[in-house]
Image (cartoon, rainbow, N blue to C red):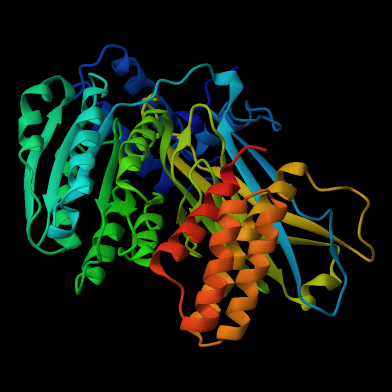
Amino acid sequence: MPPDYYEILGVLRNASREEIKKAYLQAAQRLHPDKNKVAGETEIFLDIKQAYETLSNQKLRKKYDSTLPTDKQSNLPIRLKTYYSRPNLLRSDEPQLIYVLLEISPHKNVGEITAPPLNICLVLDRSTSMQGDKMEMLKGAAIKVMRNLRQQDVISMITFSDRAEVVIPATSSYEINRLENRIHMLNPSGSTEIFQGLQAAFDEIKKNSNKDYVDHIILITDGRTYGDEKECLKLAEQASQLGIGISTMGIGKEWNDEFLDTLAKQTGGSSRYISRPEEIQRFLIDKFESLSQTIADNVILEIKIHTGVKMTYAFRTQPETGPLPLKDSIHLGPVLQDTTLNLLFEFRIDPSLTIQDSLTLTQGLLKLNIAARPTPIQPIPIEFSSAIKDEVGNEMPSQLIIQALGKLTLYRMQEKAHRAVEQGNFELASQQMKQLATSLIAWGEQDLANTAFIEAKNIQNERTISGEGSKAIKYGTRALIMAKD
């Protein structure tokens, strides 16, 4: 069987000559023997050169294509499964909703893929509000994480208040011990300006940023930034274009969860709530362990929605839960070695589309980077579609999507209550919060249900939701989605 030149270049079989040339130039720049002396990669470069010479020549390409089996399935390292909430759509005069769960996981047939080294920057709030237990716990957690880094990892640390300071420049892990004293010497002062810290972190990450590392910024704060939110979000967009992830952690009740959520989801990162200083170390270590299991990063879903179909909701249900932006190019977060990446989409179907026998909801490409593979991974085509019939089929949906929808309902109930408060509809918001509390009891979450009942009274009496209760319910219901039954 001939080698798969399309897979070698990381392009689809219908790639244009321009796409083939671009893929070749990118690979040649990275693997050319004059620049890359790594053992074995000269042979890979020669394969790439042969692939380009064949596919860029129309006659050679046509002859080569004739040797490929028509039913050939690429030996990709990623496996995809799709689950639907209903067996088919109905012919109807009313709009319909359909949910699609996309499961992305390492393919069992490709063997073990080595997790790439980390290029991580910790961005720590050192403003006056962090004094006391929060700062001491944060310093201890940072030192603990650094001591557990692998030899190949690179880490840097930025602190910020109304200015940023590079406490530890991008450094290999074996040099960390002599720098620990810098962390012990940190003292809180000043106000909170997140952009200062993010910009300094961005600059440190870029020093080692390349496809062979997992580039990630972890921001930890207990306060709100004022006046620089737009600059922060613009920087997050730049980070996403370079494949740099941003994850955020908020301590206590004063930080702006909507802002940190938006900041993280632009890059496929996650946002977490830390209710007590004692939890800082656990959350930070969990994040590092998760990143250390990365086999594919910079995972992007590019989609085109069919006219008359509207994607109304998108949510990552695991490994780290959180809403996804409703865009045609979505950063999904990494694929880990031992956990599937699960994404749940809600589509609204216009009734005018149900006169046909089938409907393509969306088509797209899944793009990703696997540092352990020297050649690019070709984009993986994705299509969501449904049959259209006069009656609902008898086929039951998978338990996987049923459970995901059941738990996501709890999270969306608190979203609706918050939205009603913002709109000034306090009676409706209080009712929705009570309904959430009742549902939480049915799921066996008594403590979270009690918090929801308290907030229902707050809405009724104070016309607001408390900062602490709001975050406890929001992130508590979000955590239930990835909890194992």
